[in-house]
Amino acid sequence: MKRLLVFQHVPYEVLGKLDPMLRNAGFRIRYVNFGRDPETLPDVSKYDAMVVLGGPMCIGQSNAYPHLNTEIQCIRDAIEQDMPILGICLGAQLIAAALGAEVYSNQTKEIGWYDVTPTQEGLRDPVIKHLAGPEQIFQWHGDTFGIPPGAVHLASSPHCAHQAFRFGDNIYGFQFHLEVDQAMVERWFTIPSMLEEVANAEHLASADEMLKQTGKHINASTALGEKTFGAFIELIKAGPKRKALPSR
Image (cartoon, helix red, strand yellow):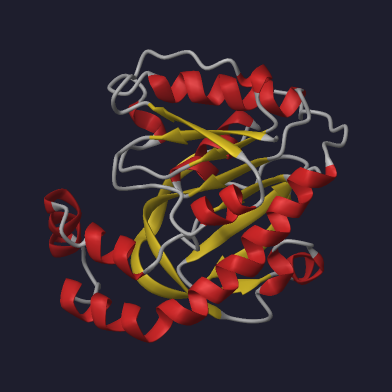
């Protein structure tokens, strides 16, 4: 049975649609909840793959959240062990940082539903190719990442050029949230800090309008997520391939 390590930061950012897909594929899942146990030091060598989830903190807040440095080192260790890795939102930023890329404030917050378009490389990628053109995908982020040295830029949006990348054959960073379902989005709009972020941000729709848009787009997003994550799961099953870390 394949063993999957999941880095979690807050209780409301979970695997979502990925959870039943992974369990149905026969994976044994272990969560490391850094919000509850920030000093834990996971041994990544015991696992076959890793998923790093999102969270409200920023890479630059490592003084307040020192586990971010722990995670970056764990990601580097996992890369050196040829481990498939998927990073979502903050998780993608942590992978980018581990690979030597800059993480910085995006020109605008993306909260809600936005068009995400694959690059030419994305159209050929075994995972991202399921984005046939601009797709409405849920977002919640204020920061973004540079494309790491040696990585391939896979997708963009009008307000955030770097939406996805691949390093090697089986390491992916997604800025967007394909893992969400209707219940997960609705839960996010009950979290006071998240509602406050929406209220204080400029040029955003209201929370009520975003929930209406969720009802319109969630079925197509869920179907796209099943295809995309299904392809990533197949990469895990296929086994790791040797890759070299970029020089620092």
